Image (cartoon, rainbow, N blue to C red):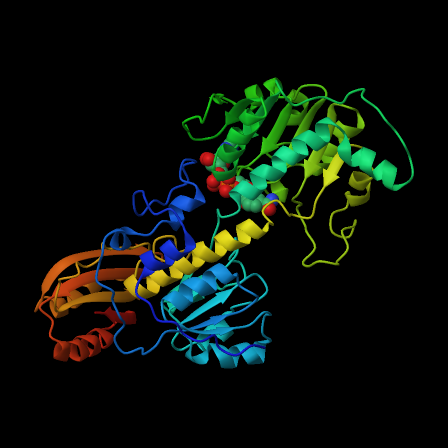
Length: 473
Ligand SMILES: NC(=O)c1ccc[n+]([C@@H]2O[C@H](COP(=O)([O-])OP(=O)(O)OC[C@H]3O[C@@H](n4cnc5c(N)ncnc54)[C@H](O)[C@@H]3O)[C@@H](O)[C@H]2O)c1
């Protein structure tokens, strides 16, 4: 286990972005599922960092302490260091006893998928303000309990879109040329030089189901290879390049040489591709699923491959996947596994679509930026368990201004009580939102003397239904 990393104090987020050479030229607060908003849009600094704004510091918490577990990427450490946070860094996860001890006095924690932040652990985290999941999933955190304690949770759902899109391109070529079969044969000493049923991908039609972050990236790459691109999405989405949106899934299936799935896991997408949809596909076409295991009915695919309806398939995600590396992928997990493994021109990969060094580094930047923005400015945009609230930054010349961050139970009458307390000052701006049982108010108030801050804090702390109060000034 390593010792805390020494602090190197500098000012604000824009500086860390400059150090990381991240483009900061476009509009703030760009968080959307629109394909034109790539993950880099989300990495751009928020409103308050585009021009010089006042750096805020917390009242009453002292230096920010952050515990980083599971070998979180260096890009994140650089951002936290640039903010002057005290960092305690471990390459591994901690066992429950160690975690109970270490989490006691930290303000923020960064984890990946192995660390379980249960209600028992979180009850011990008396100072915890924010959790960063440096990964896609957030199942490892008791999100509801965290919100009930005023702890917001951030993750990085889209930082690996490009990695997945590139893998699909690789799979299209591998399937089209039967590369995985030829490679496997040669590994077994068999020379089998064939050209029959091996094709170039130029001029073929790619059908993309789900034109979100991944689907749209893929669209651009596929056109660069000379493919025609069709896509089907439940939303109307502007096409990139010369891609064309089609009106129904069936139309896409019947016109595409390659079909690739990029939809989320929802009730509507369960077995989105099953017997009927496979029957609608072109004879000798190919299917790729890098989305989620529930989206494709694998027994139906097995049949389609066996009868030669499809010429090949690639699957990266499965209904049940091993919990960790080294565990077996066999019929105990999914009853059809051995049948699947016996099929030709079928690429099976262990959920690695988004697993690249670049994705890890982008995840580090994205989550660290979200955490820093929440700690320094209170902005909860992108939180997965929490009302999303943000205010523009304070001007550099604004004196005697305090930013109030007040998290409370979502019950009637709370805002009246809080605004009575704030009404002795000038409320420059305020914004409040709720999610489930938790609500979050942000307000910038001016005319607050340094001596008033303590009183203001204790009055807010004493209100009924308060979950947590932070004052930044
Ligand atoms: N294999 C991997 O390692 C890996 C990595 C990252 C993401 N993923 C998965 O890839 C999938 C796509 O991710 P994304 O980031 O592009 O998501 P996204 O949210 O950006 O895009 C999903 C798109 O699917 C559309 N959609 C939803 N339901 C649909 C339906 N029934 N029919 C057609 N379109 C529908 C949405 O409108 C949206 O445009 C997700 O399931 C995600 O979990 C896998």
